[in-house]
Image (cartoon, rainbow, N blue to C red; front, side):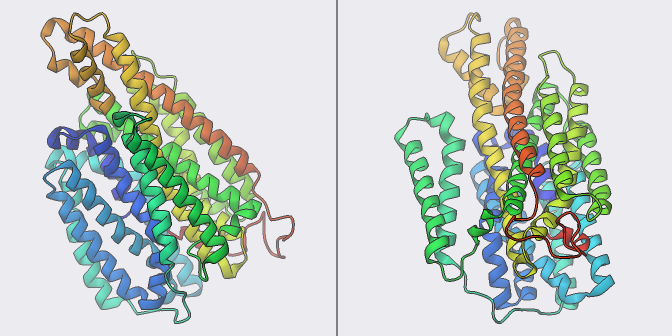
Length: 504
């Protein structure tokens, strides 16, 4: 449920937009609210589970996530849907934080390796089938069904959890870092609001400037507090002084921002500009999904045999090449122009989904493995939320400008042209042509398609550039010069790290 709800929503967004009259910023929050809350609360939830009991907190997380899903399914407006997606994120953070520790409490030795392998395969499959599942559900039962489907799963998981899970806790677990939670939540929330609302309100407006200043001050305060004051910091930021860990963290952030962040806008393009239904759009995402799933399975067999820097660097090479390939779209391109890019980006996504956890564990000593894995997973979720926001800001600005320029010769008032351009920039694509008189529809449709493709071109190239930077970081992965790898480590990967690659 947790990973499916990140990708399953993407194909349903155009239907949500039409049904609830949602703007682009509303759609961005449908994705970002879930990822942002999950990212902020993941580490605190792990600490809370150590103290209160992981089984108890896991069951509470199931209730929150399932209740959030029900609330999303019946949400009457786009704003309430965004709020309830945040509630899902709270439950998701709790479930992510407690799932692997619970497995470690239930199994040991070879059985633990098999359990974690099955767990990892489930996560990979959920990510891969998300777009297609979202398309099938949206087309057959409506977009609300993508949330309703979580209800029987959540109830069944709760019943089995009550009956079969054993309690585990760490009595010596640290106290929750409340100040750190407040500071990082304020920083990320202010930043997301500024990026998502910047185009609509104006980047120089007092409110947007204030949000950016708030984000900067809160982030600086978080770094200072975690490094200098916190007795039990939620994130040991000193880990970033290690080359291997810093490289892993940057790759985790970049792959989510560049690839997962792009899925929302590609879905809007495939449906609202190319004219495909949700299920047809889901089928056209299959090359990305299948390539990701296959790469994840192969990578699991390569960990410990292939140097980690080759896996991480190679993954980002594939992602960068895929994003750059998709940037070659033109106003006359069909969906087939996306296929090579889908496959390459999917390979990069699949490799990192399996390799990042092992890379995080390889970069630190075993005693700090939990903290390292938690930070890397947090960065992945922050990357997803930031990708939706940053890419959306670039996309909307470019589409609005290009579409308005293409419509300049249309015999219509300036206000009408501006409203049409704004609608296209909100992801409506060529559907705006239905709002104008028949003689002008061909012109408006052409302008909308040209504007949308121009926006995608810019953001895909920007995402590819980020992936190139992450490629450099990936190939730089290695043991800290002051802390050589202990005997038995292969390519900087701890022996036996394979089964632990599935840490959520």
